[in-house]
Image (cartoon, rainbow, N blue to C red):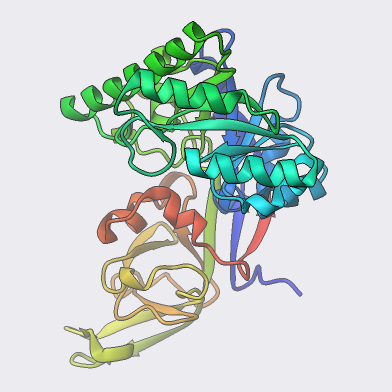
Amino acid sequence: MSFKDRCWTEIDRSALRENLRILQSCIPDGCHLMGIVKADGYGHGAAEVASLFAGIPGSWLGVACLQEALDLRRAGIALPILILGYTPPHQAAVLAEHRLTQALLSPEYTCRLAEAARQQGVRVMAHAAVDTGMGRIGYAVQDVAEAARALAADYGRPELEVTGIFTHFSSAYAQTEDARAYTRGQFEKFSAVCAQLSRLGVDPGLRHCANSPATVNCPEYAMDLCRVGTVLYGLLPQTAMTRPLPFRPALTWKARVAIVHQLPAGVPVSYDRTAVTGRPTRLAVVTAGDADGYFRQLSNLGKVKIRGHVCPVLGRVCMDMFMADITDFPDVQAGDEVILLGGRGEDAVPCQWLYQPIGIGPSAVTCNIRPRVERTYL
């Protein structure tokens, strides 16, 4: 059974390939890319996106958890994979068996993972996370020398093969002077830790700190790897880039007009009567809802395109459908395609229409598209 006549996405492989080509042109010689394919490739299909990196020497993949990494291995993806989030230490043997690299989330976590690996008789590959100002995971860097000594000791654990080190920028998306200074400070702390490790006789391995905005804006932060997620999918807003680059959204999300009906003025629309028609109103019932991933918070705030017309969402978004006001567009009919996200030309719906009104980030939009929405590849 196909759901394409109700609610579906179309993912443009050529856009993904072109975005990847642009990213390769952004990084200096000797640097490589880590494609972030967590959350099923931000809703684009993790294995499909991962396959784009297969022929590029030095490429890595980044995921959030063990299950995502194992899914890629089962799909035949042989590239190095870094698990950026938590894996229970008792899974050490699974990490080793599938040649997966685990982020070392803290000194305490490293101890538990190393002990589990010792008990199971395996050696686990790892990259050390360093907290330079994100406050999330990593070896804290209040004092560079102290952090480097702790890391050097853990690099030397026989149960671990530590082949890299990384940090994460908290504010690289913002283009204020304060944000740029904070990112620069994070980079300088991270560089100091790497340098101190080298002075202690420890090869830090692959060094990486640049996320999507840093990759396109700050080649001086590239180091050995750049981790690219949002920008790879064409979702990085232009406001987060210091130069215009022709990245294209790869995903278009569509639904249908199920029926069209006319309401007189003064009639409430949808649950809780949050909207009332102020005039005789023509409504399109759209075949998507919050169970498909169209945020309920977009009730009375969202906009879609039908036949190139901008049609506002009217009333509360329901579980499986919502209403759009088409009063001013008599050419809209039942069966028409509705563009919820993406598209080209006059039909294009920018990602900002879905995330800015409700205060979330662009990646949350595509990551939230639910499994019952069929993915098709062009």
